[in-house]
Image (cartoon, rainbow, N blue to C red; front, side):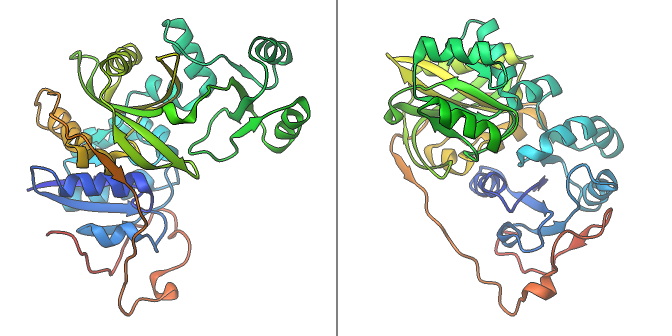
Length: 348
């Protein structure tokens, strides 16, 4: 049995990684961490630990204790907020414990988490992408509007899901968005929301091998909730070329729309995706493939995938005899790891 740690199990990325690993070909002992004591994800792991926030004093020491105590072989980084921290802490954690931190190199994270950097990368490498400008660069914004007209998209330069993403239909709305959200970028609006896709890769630019999957998707509140397998070879070839140019090592996700049949990527997520908990149902288990590649040294192979539709739904977890107060409120004291007294419903 392999022993792994999944971070941020209170979120859909961490929970999706857990689902994929539980459905994999191998058996896994899964330790889960989160800074919120009342995380539903703690009910699905074999060991639950409340930790400080990523970057807080004592976090490296806390993780080291968990890894050494539980014999962890790999850490799945499952929150966008944690990527920079784990990228910086990776060397020390791996050297001290022998674990592997499944996180992309720092330049990949920097480009993917900064939408202006993303736009510059795509343009520099000749990949189709929507014209993008800083909202503070008025001449560039004027040129974008003159070229493409309204509507345009305004979004935070650094942000996740669809929080503070606006469809702007006039100058007054753009000014209001600038006041509401600092450090915005403005982007050409790509028409036809029915042609929106999420595409994932897993592999190694050093080895020049990637597997890929493409899903047509519908969104609800910034999260994918309906998907259909859409293995378009042109999209697959493009996202693999992007991953190679970026220098991806592990998992990476691309959001795109088709414009006149051509894939225009508008966002790069340099991490495991919120759809990891969907993809394994099609036969594309990127968390397990990443483990096999990075920890076991196995080459990435494009898996056969099953056509169909996957629909997402809410689910609930009942914790008998638990109470908010007894579970704790807020984050634990800095530097401490709190083992949660929850009975796991996962395999042991």
